[in-house]
Length: 492
Image (cartoon, rainbow, N blue to C red):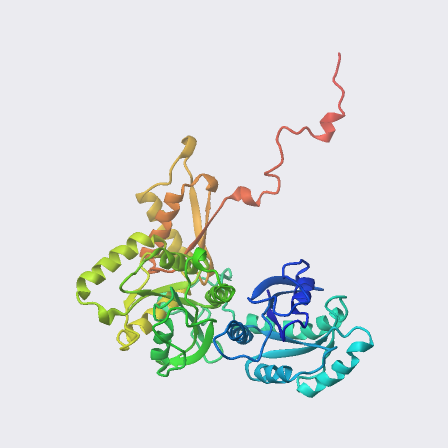
């Protein structure tokens, strides 16, 4: 999905009708009675070659109390701040109302991009409202009829340049991952060779760090402590943070972009549409990060959801740092730390050796250790090893523990080379790679971690055989050739 589009406006202006047309299904309830939609409804929209996420919102009403209408308005206002584009819809037959003018002012302050649409503008009945829409100061209004499908081409041409802008932004901000190692450029980062690409964080390309965890683990408080300012809203209530907030900051001389994310609960407990959007935004922040800090609560560490979040970061191929917050509340710190390390090794073997840092976001203790752990995890994530050293290591590993021999045929390990970085990826050429058990692959991965000092970072191991490059390997040997088919037997 290249961007998110929210449909906002007063009740009964046709938001749900347009939503159904964009997604191509009757997902949203539609009725002449105003106020049918009360929640956020999300769908996958198609408009020409554009694919994006569209959100149907509750009708905006000029109510600010704790009534149902007031809560619906606050929910919609939060959605306005989360999405990329707002399509502000008015009723062209009714014209501009005082409520439209109030909500136009809200959109000017909160929305990133606003498109004004005068719906129900088919025929002459909507011409007056279309002209009045210019008075809102939101640019030229789009003439639209969601019910009859008029104005879809114009909407496409208005979204097209914005979609290209969001694609360029996403490409510029996304970190380079799975970088191919060119032949003849093998280096060992531990020797400080100049042949390796320079991945040092800079102002142009800062180190991207996402802080993730369960609700109320202290993510926003941690980032406020790092930047030295109460930039993010905090409090004892769980679930205050709604969307992933990006904050550029130079920490200890290192340019960084810090992502504060919403707390991630178990999927079965996530019921509200807004929370689903918040969690999806947090997952997207993980994909945009280079280093992921998994923040745990010292009182209840390594719960099932913590393990799922850490496993997600590993499966996405990101460098992982585990930080245990609220350490200032612990009395017996030595015994607690020993238990944490044992639980870490037991529950997250795929992140064996990843740094575990104890911090206190409230008091600021442990921030230096966290900074060092992030930089070290990033350096390991970018590590490259020469082919010569890799093959020396592979020979020693197979000599001390030979590969198995399924069916009596010994699997031969021919050679190994590093094919990718960010995270490190290695290719081993061998015979019968499909028969190599997973236990032996783990043996090789653990050996790579220990020999080349790559603790904690995800390691990708690819097994290949020479037969994989043979274009005739799948051709049946029993198939007779065309020449033999036409030879008549000699009846002598």
